[in-house]
Amino acid sequence: MTAQTAVAPARRPRGFNLEKWGWVFMRASGVLLVVLIFGHLFVNLMVGEGIHALDFAFIAGKFATPFWQWWDVLMLWLALIHGGNGMRTIVNDYVTHEGARKALVAAIGLAVALLIVLGTLVVFTFDPCAGVFGTFENPDSALFEVCQAAAN
Image 1: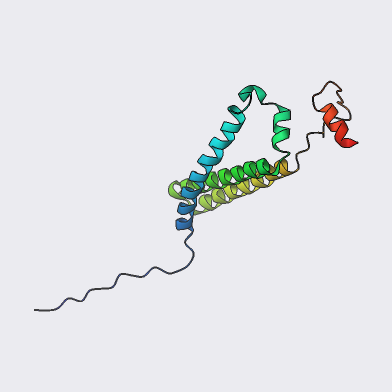
Image 2: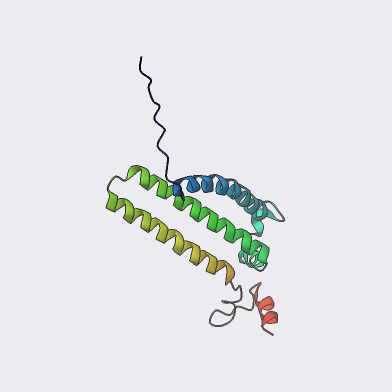
């Protein structure tokens, strides 16, 4: 009778596992996005006059407060990174040509980064009075008096 020796399973190299952390991020960001999106929809569509209150002045009022700026920026960042990571996963699963896969993943990353930068700039540099004075000056505008008072 011979004794069989058990072979120890191969150990995985330790280090940063992008796929594992991508999976964890998708679950955590998905839960947070549900809260952010439904909060956004509730405030915009249900509170006050509801959908009838949505106009340029409503958005200008929201973007005048840091709370709503950060709420919308967090929603933007999480949604874009969540979507970009999902697209990266799909590309990795279905694109077999290594060069095409690298090009597509790079294009997704570039698009996500560009949209995050542009969206963040829009939220934090939004000026409701930018178009009130000048060529298209309209004294009948709801913002005209507010912007004129702010300018003085």
